Length: 241
Image 1 (cartoon, rainbow, N blue to C red):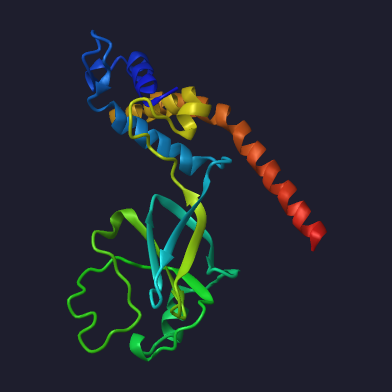
Image 2 (cartoon, rainbow, N blue to C red):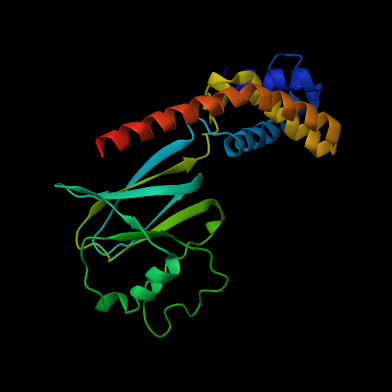
């Protein structure tokens, strides 16, 4: 089902026709319904381990650039870099350890192939004096609330492609005829998740519990399938090792 169809069924089951416009004309344009549906989809992403939970994102960074920012990431799992000749997986480091290890000025640090990465703390309360006495390896992002980021050091001595693998939120469809993993593969669960969030907004504990029970019963099988697939992969790696 696409977004428009999911929204229509959501308002029909909830009786909240005020959350769409012109339902008499079968238009069903969003008038608040998507707030609950999108919140429900994110709740599903956080609750259940699905085959589409893992995502990957790439960016090309220039020589000397030691950071990368991105959105919609729930958890960073692995990072690779590659140039035109080779690809290398970076080793995860503690952010504080990395900051203490590379404690010289940026201009005084020898550029080389990056070896380590760390999830970055990019929120600054007041960065006015951040580089007042010298430019060190400090990376912040303005309006950082919707971003995740990594830093990787030493700073690269050439342009690299950076690949981040991790858990990402399911894409929220932009167009009315677009869809998402939950809408396409598990449409009723997608609708139920929106109804759950609606009941939570009412502070209706019993109603919310009923929807959550239906969701959990339906999706538990997906969780088990994903775990079985991961266990099979681990077995292959152990045999090859």
